[in-house]
Image (cartoon, rainbow, N blue to C red):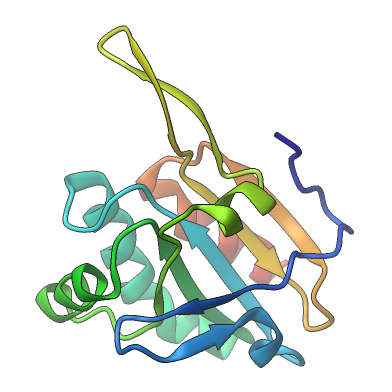
Length: 154
């Protein structure tokens, strides 16, 4: 699995959001964007992460960054997640984890001694030109916002 580094061109993508709308990374050209990958909607860690992003969304937008969340969940699951927590940003469905693979956010995980393939919670701050400003792999749910804001405020 190749990992992205600062300066790399962010892989473009087109995925469906929680409302059935096609969203492309290129739609955000001219604006920074936080793209974060999470394993599963409605789980405790993913809820903690999404709610913290929701709560900081206005601040991130004032610093010039939009937000996109991506998981293997269906658009219907994403919509329930958004509605339950009032997230208010695009949640994209990467059912076949192709985009997660392109970003190096898909790989071998282990739980209770069992190995399996899945999303590795990762976040990427992408520049206005579509390049990676910063990549955080295996980020803790509570650390996404502080790490992004630290870069945005620098």
